[in-house]
Length: 167
Image (cartoon, rainbow, N blue to C red; front, side, top):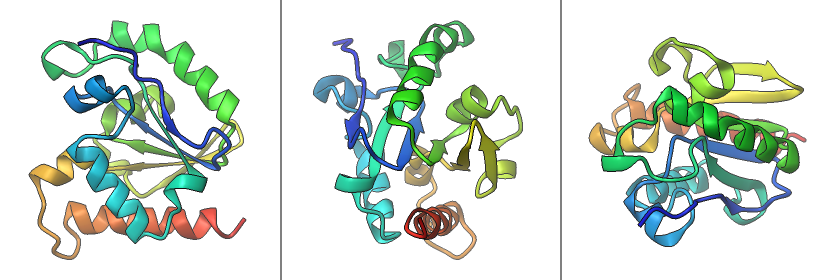
């Protein structure tokens, strides 16, 4: 299809969640995080105590689906990054969650594996930013055992929730 997928959620939210790029379902519906990964992320956010309607705004680094659902190229990221930076400015969140390595590399310009940075807070432009595993990764490694990716992500989101509601 190839439609622009801009955002979903509250434009006045204190929490901005940035993903990589739209998948097939997002391309169909025109909103980010509405496919299997998005449904899992919503469930995790709710379980962490985060109000999706009031407190969250979702967007992606890339605003349209890459061919064959491949990772976005550096050229594509560079084309879309000014738009993303403008979205961040307009929403003006206090907290940002970066899901996966593409969002992490784009915003924090960190090349480390996500496993080394997830759950750690960074300060940038007056905002607190945390990285988490991408929900699509959690779908592939779905064990809910302690200290596995699912459990770690839920802990990270509970950490976000406690900061978000301490305001």
